Length: 466
Image 1 (cartoon, rainbow, N blue to C red):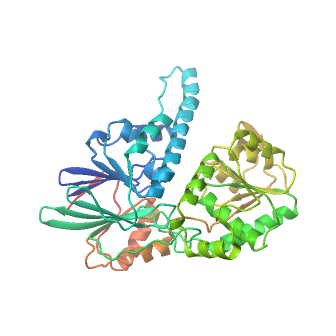
Image 2: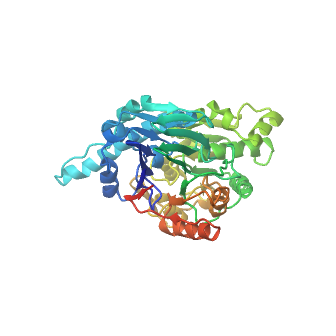
Image 3: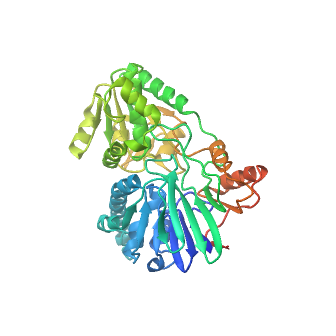
C-alpha cells in the first residue's frame, strides 16, 4: 500500500491524497488549489497523475478546496464513483455549478488582457456544463454504513461536524495477509457549533491523516460570537444604519441566519429586516432545510419552544433570488442587515453592497470569517482607506467590526481532543495535512508530547509505503 500527498501538503487548499492498494488507485478529495493567479491556473489544470488511472474518489465534504476540481478530473477521463454523504452530494450540485461559472468568468477577464498583449487565449479549467456532467458520478452513502468501494477496501463515514454533510473517512483495508485501518479526518468541526451535531470520535486506527488548519490558534466562543452579533445589530439600528456582512455562502450564512432567528425570537434585537443576497447561499440554505437529520439538539429545542418552522426562516428574513431585487436593496433607507457573498469580499454581490454603503458612518461592515492577505476584506479590516471597489475608490467611513467565534474548524484545543481519542499503541503513523507550516508543525509538536510516536508533515508529492 502506498499513500502520496498531492495537495493540502503544508498548505490549506487543493486537498488531494492518492491511496494505491491491490492494484487500484483511490483518490481522497479533489480540491481546487488557490494561490497566485498564474500558478493556480496551471496547477489546477494539470493533475500530477493520469485522471483515467483513478478508480474511485472519496469526498469528505463539499467545500471547493476539497471538491472543486472534480469536474476537471471527469473532463480528463475519470470514470469511477465519487463516494460521499447525501448532503455533500446535494451541496456539491450547487457549488460545482457555481465554480464552473466562476471559471468561465475568470477566463473572460484574463483573455481581455491577453488579447491586448497579443498572448494566447486561455480556456476555462472547466465550465458549468462540465460540472453538470460530473454529478451523475456521485454516489451517496449514509453515516455509519460500511460499503465496499474497491477490492479489499471498505468505506465508512462518520460525522465530522464541519459543514452540512461533512464526514471523516474510515477505510478498512485488506491487502494479501496485511490489514490496516486508515482514517482521514477531512475537516474537523467544533464541539460548540450552530445547527450541526458535533464531531464524532474514533479510537482505533493504524494510519491517521488529519487536518491542521488551526493547529497553532484558538477561537473565541460561539456564545461570545452571538453576543457580539447582537451588539453590532443593536448599535447600528440605533444609528439608523445597515449592517453589511460578507459571508461564505455555505455554512457561515446559515449560522448567521439561525443566530439572528434566535435573537429575534428572544427579543434581543430590534425588528430589522434581513436580506440574504447570494444565489449560492439561497440554494445552499435549501439543502440545509432538506437535511434535518443533521441538526443538533439545540435546534430541535428552539423549533419546539418557539414554534418556528425552520432555523432559517422567520417573518423578517428574505432570500433574494434575482438581480432586480438585489439592486433594489441599494435604495433602502431604513435599518437592515444584508448578508452576501463572497466571505472575503473578492467577488459577487457583496461588492455592490459595500460600494453603496461603506462611505456612510451610520453603517457597519461586519466580518465573520478569516480574511486572507491581499483581499478587499483584509484591506478594509486593516483600516485601509480609500479602498478600490468595482473600479472606483471609496472612503471607509462605515464602522468596521469583526467576530472571531464562527469558524467551522476545530482550533488547536479541538484538534488535540479529537486526536486524543485514538489508541496510541495501535496508531503507527499520523500525517498532518491542510495546514500552513507553522500551524502543522506546532500541532505536530503538541501531538508528540501527548504520546503520538510517528507524526509527519508531508510535502507535496511525498510518498509513503506500508
